[in-house]
Image (cartoon, rainbow, N blue to C red; front, side):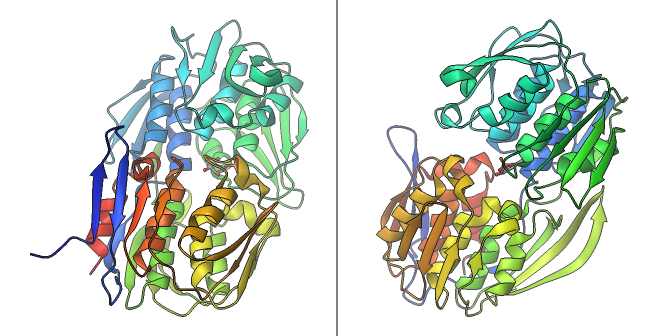
Length: 449
Ligand code: S3P
């Protein structure tokens, strides 16, 4: 009888442990896989579908917990969103400004995107009252970054800690246009302001210090909004009160989910993986640039444009990695991939420095602190910096008992580290992966040879 190297164990508190035992010759990954739909595009397709006129059809929606939270919130406000599935979800929108007051609290679960983008939409719905909340992690994440511009636009918002933390209460009102200079390069902040600007008479502009993902801009234009984009100043201007019309949205595979396989294929000897249908929007491909700097063997094949978003198949083969420095304007273009890049760095030759990434401290967990502590348990040489990590690579990772801190990207990053470790690892709270990648463990079992 062969022993499965990857097992899930249920715990009495309903959490799950992922137990990974590499064979003495290591675990190589082989095959052709697809990854689930892009999380950012999935949220936006549900939201814009809900507030547009007529029917929106979504193909390839991510069925993770986060988009489910978005769907639930907008259903509670009158949008008709059919049963979520990857083939075809039909959304009947209510038309701009026509969301109804929900009868209960809106629960964004673990999803910062749901809460921050939705606040922009709710703030402009005059005379309706909303309360938004989320899980333990989301209730500790900073909402002041969106409350501040919304209050400048005239919004009425109250919350814990001087209106900085959820639960937040919103009394919708008529907003006025502003030019917001965002102190952070955050697509969630940019999108919140643009969505608030939809209902405003006049032009609303947001300028960010570095370019963050532009899925909102692309999709708002596809739905009929008028946008001016100044790529020299990283500014976007929206003209308020357009007619938004339902569209067909085809969601590409999420490059942030593909990132786990790109690194796994690069670091596990003997591996060769093809990941088909991955979104390669240039505001998201920082991971490909960094892995190229690290001398990973990755090629893009069959590049095409699908429903306004660039898509490609990615092929990765094992190779020896080199350390590199990651910082500056690259950070917003790979913000969610830093935990898995930290894993790659533990095996690369030399010292990798990740800087300008203090934003990681306010994600689903403090990703700098958690990656430093959990990789150290595996014998990696990691120093935590105020805004990043310094990782001296070339160490042999050893199996360890670790925790995801209920953060989906930590759970999956540690699982990939465990594949190349010298003995068994246990990852507590591995169920968190279902936030963005419900079939992660099944796919891992499939590609292990
Ligand atoms: C997202 C933007 C990013 C990212 C998050 C999804 C989005 O957050 O970390 O997972 O869909 O707009 P920030 O824009 O706050 O950096």
